[in-house]
Amino acid sequence: MAVAWYDWAGGTKWLKHYSSAQNILIVGDGDFSFSLALATAFGSGANLVATSLDSYAELNTKYSDATSNVTKLEAMGATVLHGVDVKDMNLHANLQLRWFDRIVFNFPHAGFNGREDEVDVIKSHQELVRSFFATARHMIWRHGEIHVTHKTKHPFSMWGIEQLASEFSLVMVEQAAFQIQDYPGYNHKRGSSWRCDQNFAIGDCSTFKFRLF
Image (cartoon, rainbow, N blue to C red; front, side, top):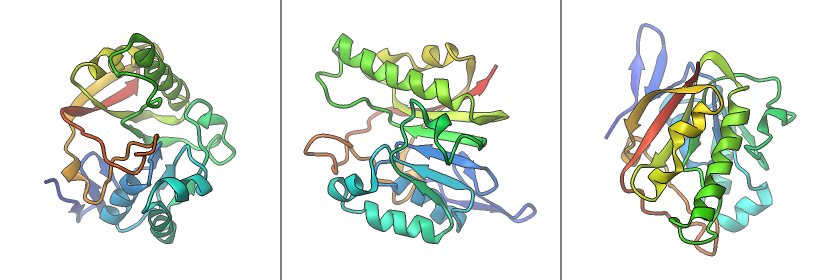
């Protein structure tokens, strides 16, 4: 398990790829547990913007811990936004004039609309990821990074994450193995259907890191 560590010289706290000195935007965070894992490790959420597609009211009906997680994040100084769609998030009133060092989208998914190996289902997931890259690329600093954590085995490997990123002048700088235990408290939620509050099987997955050409 990765543990948070502290840079005594610079006064910066780290958890895996992320530090308290970075301005970080987290999108599609479900019950906000990933954002809370970072804020807890940093001892502050001051540089975090945590978002979900769901409205605040929807969170209360979908996730058992979401309200508590949001309260904790806000108490730690994080900005929490609801109803943020990755398709136009760069135009959101609270985001359009902000730039970030890291933008993170863990396990993007367009919803359960059929078997994951069906062509139309894969295309719907690809369109979601395309929309994310199209907007996120306008929201990072020149040397910032866009991170997508994604399953790497079939049929999820058919999404072609690296190819999708290249369509928006993004180049992959690293593919790092993802271990959920590196982020204590993170609960990866299904996010839709009657099982929305349940975890899903992760299996083999990686965090794909991209930068602008």
